[in-house]
Image (cartoon, rainbow over all chains, first blue to last red; front, side):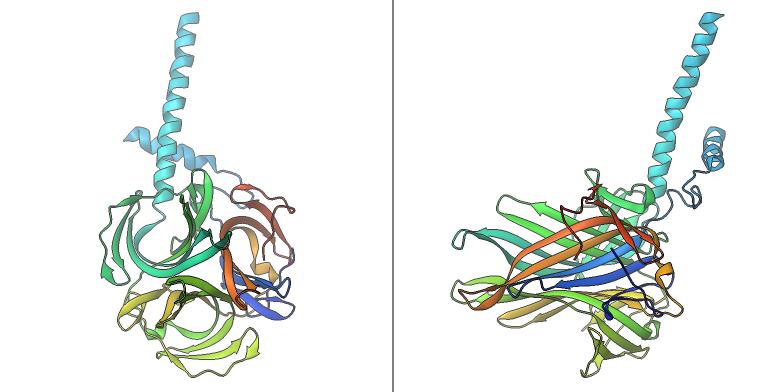
Length: 80
Length: 325
């Protein structure tokens, strides 16, 4: 499906604003208002949140787990 | 010698198993720690019933609320207030999975933002005679906030329903639903000007707003919503409680920014959705809301203008099954 974000972070469909993205791109909200026929209309709100890393810092942008964090955690555990 | 080696392998295996469980517990504890502190949660819900008279499903009621909640960071929620009044409710457990995803029976129902300042989840309660469908949006309270925290241009996306008291049946029914966008200017001094409605110039009287020290938006001193710590996002509910009609709305507002493009939406997102279907009833010659639903979608944005839907309610998404409106 296509999407379009303008210069101000506003999401548009056929040039009409339907939602907006936060400046860091982590959160968006948009509405849907379909009028498939003269008898039916669907009205929807969507809130999207970017998925964060498993544990802060333990997965790099390629999705590779940094095993050092895991080993450090286990080391700290055994020292306790 | 063989026995020693076998014992050593067994010992290593035992250590590995124990380490796995300990590490798993630590991970879960770390996931839960993402939600810690006091949050104001805005909620809008509705319930569907089967109407034996019309032999159709219909949306019979809708509501909205605010809840002040305390998350302990270790898996327990304490309810503090409901719509500004002390609220007595037993503490409830919560459990965050990896990536900040909130799940129920292994089905994703919501998500926490990476900084823990926002969460959103849906809840569905399929009862014997009615189905309750609710969406919740929570923002963390902060300090040093005021009307000045909301200043600039925001795009707001409200969705609402109109509840009507039908005197013929002595009952309430939901007769209207809407979803719109409003471009707003908030002056940092308690006044909102509506600039556009669905992309067209709008002319409405200015409206007041009030943000307290903790970022909570109030109306007549009753909490109706909240602003996040940097004023870039707000959520509030609105109720226009008339004698026969009541408009129930949830609003999400996000501050506009500069130099944005498709590239700003890139990565995997979990999206919570609530929707309503409105039809024109030829018998009553009026609109009515006959369906409501909520879903979670796992989406991949490529940063170049293309969205791929990966999952719908935790299951691989098949285009023929449903689509995002």
